[in-house]
Every structure is written in structure tokens, then in C-alpha cells.
Image 1: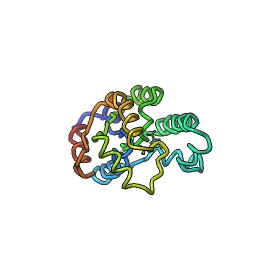
Image 2 (image 1 turned 180 degrees about the vertical axis):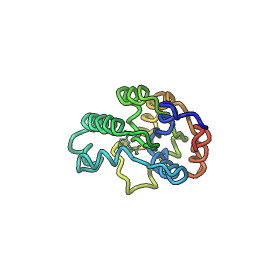
Image 3 (image 1 turned 90 degrees about the vertical axis):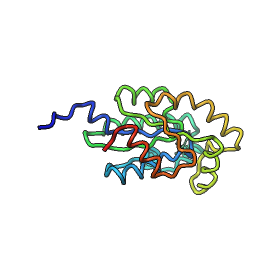
Image 4 (image 1 turned 135 degrees about the vertical axis):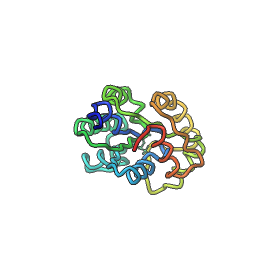
Amino acid sequence: MSAPESASDRRARIVFLVGFMGAGKSSVGLALSRTLGWPFEDLDERIEAREHRSIEQIFQESGEAAFRHIEHAALSSLIRGLGTSPKIVAVGGGAFVQANNAALLEEAGFPVVFLDAPVEELFRRCQEQQLLKRPLRRDPEEFRRLYETRRPYYMKAAVRIDTGGKDVEKVAAETIKSLGLR
Ligand code: S3P
């Protein structure tokens, strides 16, 4: 007979993907969801649904500080709504950098995975996704500065996966292996 599942086993199956714009958080999240058969949620989509506005509109109409409040409220409600079932969650590039969000994830004890890549590749990937409007993706120099400021925060994640030059399936497979998921 197998031992009953502990609370920490259950927490280990709620995985948060963090990292800079263009890291592939949503596409890797979807690949993990397909492979593991676990649901996937994108925090930015929850924000847009709650606000009935796009991320771009929120930035334009209300500014970044207001966006961060909304993002924190959305993350808190997402966490409160988690039951015992597994889930993959991708959060926007600035979320894990905010101390209040990082504290929520740490208190809850969920595994956090930092998807990383060289900043030139991150910028290129964002350029290729022109349809996705990213208010904080401006010129390459500013992009690099923001990445460098944020990287020490992302490094606090339990696991870092280097995604440079890899396809999403490979990154998903490495994530599964690193976290011992199945
Ligand atoms: C942001 C990244 C975006 C989105 C918002 C702010 C950031 O998400 O949350 O535009 O601060 O880096 P992606 O990382 O999915 O592009």
C-alpha cells in the first residue's frame, strides 16, 4: 500500500513559471500541461478577464503601479483558489520581481521555475511575437537594462532552466526532470 499523499507532495505539483519577457513561460506551460495532463493558467489572462481590458490598455490607462496592484490581487486570488489538484501557472515577467508576490509563493511552498535565455534571444523572440503587445518591451538597451536589474530576483527561484536555442518540448522535458514530476 502506498503512503498517503502529504501536503508537501501536493504543493510540489503546483508549478509556477517565472522569467523575463520572451522566456517562453506560456508556451512551456502549455507544453507541460499537454505532457503531464495538468491544467495550465496564465496570470496575465486572469488579469485581463478580471479587468475586461488588455494588459496594454491597463498600462496605458492606469499605469504600471496600478497594473502591479491588479497583478498582486490576481495572484492572491489564484493561490486562494488552488485546491489539491496539480496545476501549471505562468506569471508575467515582472510578477516574481515584486517582493509581495515572491513572498506569497514562498509562503505557499510552491516550486518556482526560472526560464532563462540570453537577453538577445529574449528580445528576438519578443520581436517575433509582434501581435503580443508588451508595454515594457521598448528598445534593446532598455530591455537589457531591465533584464539585468531583474535577473537576481529570478535567480531566487528553486530551479533555473536555460532555454537558449531549445524548443519548448525540450524545455518542458528538462523542467519535468528537474522537478521530478510525473
Ligand atoms: C511584464 C510582462 C508581461 C506582462 C506585462 C508586464 C513585465 O508578461 O505581465 O506586460 O513586467 O515584464 P510576459 O512576461 O508574459 O510578456
